[in-house]
Image 1 (tube, one colour):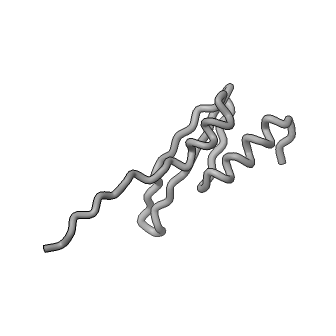
Image 2 (tube, rainbow, N blue to C red):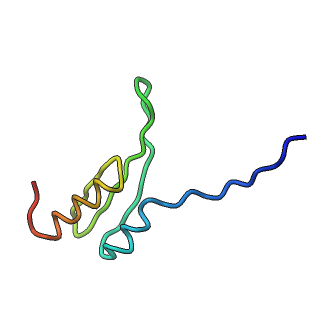
Length: 72
């Protein structure tokens, strides 16, 4: 008889960003296509500005640039 294995929930990669940037609202969404692999897209928004990325690290970089007053 196979052993039952309990899976712990994976940590949310946005939790560190929520702690570091409390003024921002964060979320994620799965994007599915018929011609490519499904991807998870992360987003952050504040004061009418929204940034998106495929990794939490890309959000962190964009938020840091915005908060420092320079962007691209």
